[in-house]
Image 1 (cartoon, helix red, strand yellow):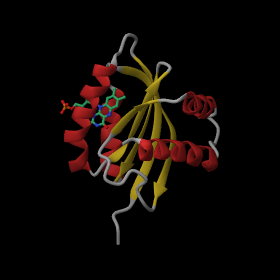
Image 2 (cartoon, helix red, strand yellow):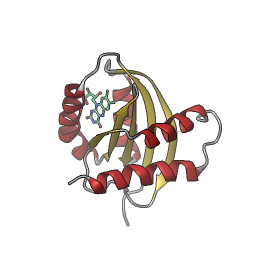
Image 3 (cartoon, helix red, strand yellow):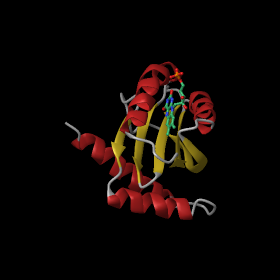
Length: 139
Ligand SMILES: Cc1cc2nc3c(=O)[nH]c(=O)nc-3n(C[C@H](O)[C@H](O)[C@H](O)COP(=O)(O)O)c2cc1C
């Protein structure tokens, strides 16, 4: 029996003037801190927003999310989707970061606009597939 996992997607507003080096520093922290918490996932940035998927045991994911919420490199963290999951999408990826493509930004904006409603699982699934295929395309 596998440990049950959850998958959480949040969106936040990047602090103005944030550069690539901020993302590099975040990845460095994630590479160190995520494996012991059993967290895998992906961070997409662009258009002034971050969208991050955190997956892993509920305790680790929620602990990390609460910690990340108070990070001054972004604000207005909002959970857009949270679900239980049978398998990881980002198996073996302690955290990857990629600049968002326009099509991804459009999906992110759409989910953000509807986050106070029940976001359809398909809309979430479509974005996860986009993220995942981006990762597969990275050499
Ligand atoms: C958008 C964003 C995503 C982040 N993602 C992670 C993450 O996945 N894992 C992590 O440990 N820290 C992440 N951080 C950084 C944490 O907020 C925090 O700075 C870090 O965990 C501190 O750990 P350290 O002092 O060991 O580097 C993120 C920060 C931001 C702004």
